[in-house]
Image 1 (cartoon, rainbow, N blue to C red):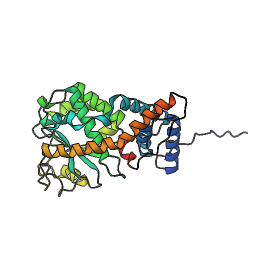
Image 2 (cartoon, rainbow, N blue to C red; image 1 turned 60 degrees about the vertical axis):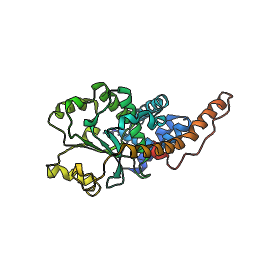
Image 3 (cartoon, rainbow, N blue to C red; image 1 turned 180 degrees about the vertical axis):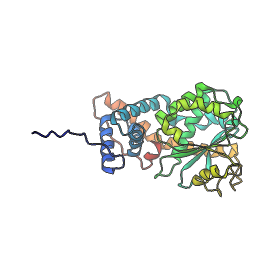
Image 4 (cartoon, rainbow, N blue to C red; image 1 turned 90 degrees about the horizontal axis):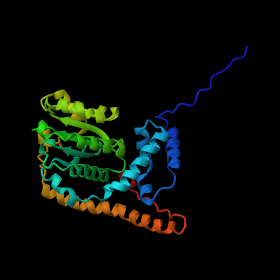
Length: 299
């Protein structure tokens, strides 16, 4: 009698650090040569996020990341500046909070009832600008942000057009994977349920699992909010003790300063890419530039 033992391919353990590192290196090799800005974007933390988004499948992660690099080259999210989209923020419908969550992560506050424009492109670029700014503000040891969405006063008249909602969902999921830690939908009205059923079709299961419905008059649901954000820093309208109020004038000053930080962060890479393009036209190998210590924030 002969005994045949079936060979099994080694299974990937997502909790095994060594296996994770091997996948990250495999993905980096699969990407091939990158531009200077591409190198800055594709940090280890960035590669890890794309791998997590595709269940550590290197080929799928590579395709996803390559699409993001193409999108960033065409859309230039890092070049959007406050004066271009400031009108979108006049009512305080979306902004980076002055406080952070219990883990030090950036909190983005959204108030859809304060919608003040009808420009599809303007609203999409405003979202991208806010995301880039929130990422730039993350501590070096953090990769994700918290969304706090206040539905006070919201009606279907304030609902984002399906076309805009679809594009925003596409950008969020395909080009900012694993950036959302938790999403708090605060006091959504009954009528929102119908809109949510439509929007859910644009979201992946992972994103849906991160969304929590919280109601001010429901103590149990408020515990979810307090788990992530200390009531001492939470604004009064969210049931906290912080009397902070959005000021468009003050926020604008902050964003102008952040625009300088953003420009400074990417400027050297823009110059290097231009120089490398000229050099490559003369068949000289590309010059490699050291990545910045804050590169993980941009990716």
